[in-house]
Image (cartoon, rainbow, N blue to C red):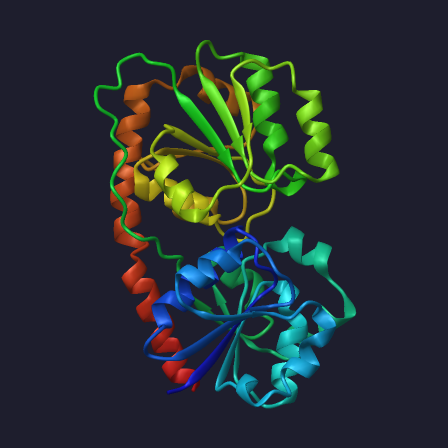
Length: 337
């Protein structure tokens, strides 16, 4: 059985590690999969529950020592995110085939640029990306394979009779500048929607997040929640009506957007990078200013949200089948090894 090493830049419960976990589950049985990371984190519980082989190295510097172990000699390395450039360099130096799964857009690439990353990108590796935007961004660096994210089928959100009840808005993801939560809070503070509720779910432990929370602590109807396990998040998603995605820099579209569409929520996203590829007309809304975002928050009705959410669910099942996603990966792996 061929051995595949799947490297995650960390074991957090954020988008990139979670889609890598999803891939590892899909490959299990046909390949010997080993998932590993330089750092420990809460994803380890998910790995144990999935009965996957996994390791946490303790530090990025131990990569070289790790690769010397007999059981670490894979037939293929799948490196995940730009932060995995040391893995790409190590694999290529040993002649090990490598697929580099990239999720970062232009702004993130510029912010992360270093001499090591430049060297890794110059190797003209084989890349896997989720969107046409990313395919265009990286096509000059090597050979690019476009594989849209996949999403498992879950029970649909129960809208019932939407009526005129207050709407539940959600922003999910690490609270940080590039995710743009300040845009939503600024829009919310301007329109002060009557009865509506806003939940910001994500790690808010960094300085920017703490400052943001303090600045908008006076807002009514706003709740802040800590990150939760993937299964708990999936179960709770149906409690919300509208997902707001105000990102400043996404390589294509965040996984949470896809999860919300599959569940049947209405999605309102910022006009950024590859968002329009996933939020098609009739399946959600694209906004490009705080004013237009505020108008949407203030004026959208439960009936409108429910109709768009149902259309989004049909689109996600057509375009983002998890079965197709895994099969596309398996076909690519067969070509490489």
